[in-house]
Image (tube, rainbow, N blue to C red; front, top):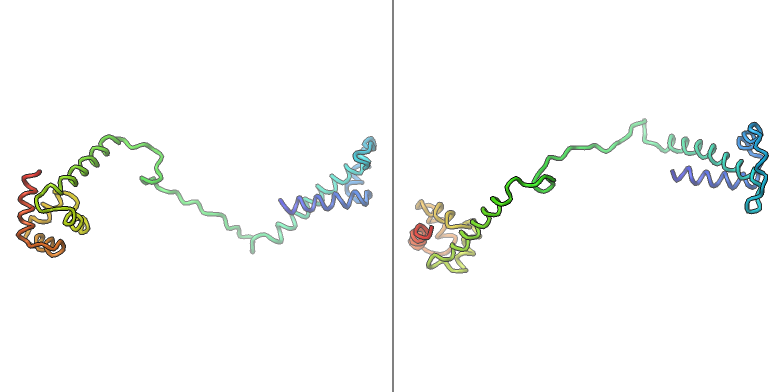
Length: 176
């Protein structure tokens, strides 16, 4: 497009200087367009019409030649490939079916997390250590501490004895 505009303006200017350039002058002579001799900004109207015709004709020819020689090699056009994206929760445009239930689940999770520090002996520091290893709720604590190896794992990572973990598990059962 830029090549067409540049070539149109260039050839329009050349035609204003040399008004007898073909094909514009030829087309004006064939059509008998001699009634446009009224001056526009000091330039005869017929010269402006010839300039516009020359600019259009040569502009199209130059733009076609430019796109032919500057086009893709071997005639291969690399079009962008459109890959359909599947709807995920991030780019989905439909509303959720039950946003109220989703809110209730998160509210229950907040309550369980808040209840986590109610257990005697689990303060802020131990709750952070438990959350760091993936224990977020009372149910998580009960599930992991239900076996002896789970209690040893928790005791090692939190920094307390397995009997303390067992005591926390008993208190967690009563808090549920």
